Image 1: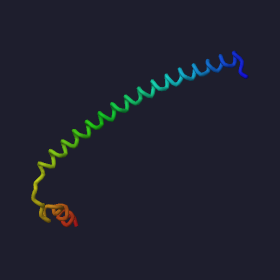
Image 2 (image 1 turned 180 degrees about the vertical axis):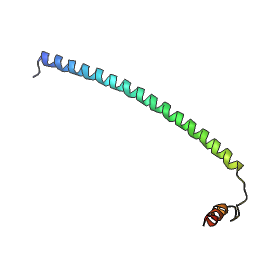
Image 3 (image 1 turned 90 degrees about the horizontal axis):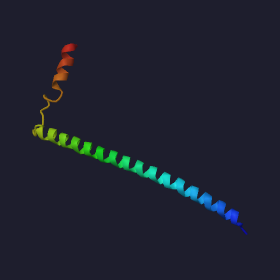
Image 4 (image 1 turned 120 degrees about the horizontal axis):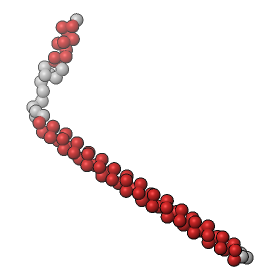
Length: 82
């Protein structure tokens, strides 16, 4: 059977462990808040970038480009260089 001193030592260890876990929990909450803030910031930046891309896409011509317009100038330059 445990003595009173054994029980007191065990309670002391439990109190120390509880305090350690409480500090660890507080640190984890801070880290979670920081990560949440970073995630929200990245989402905001992503939405802004999507908006800019959507704006650029609306400015693109809707007609398909002819074969001469797509890379034709590069072929001519290679031909002239030979």
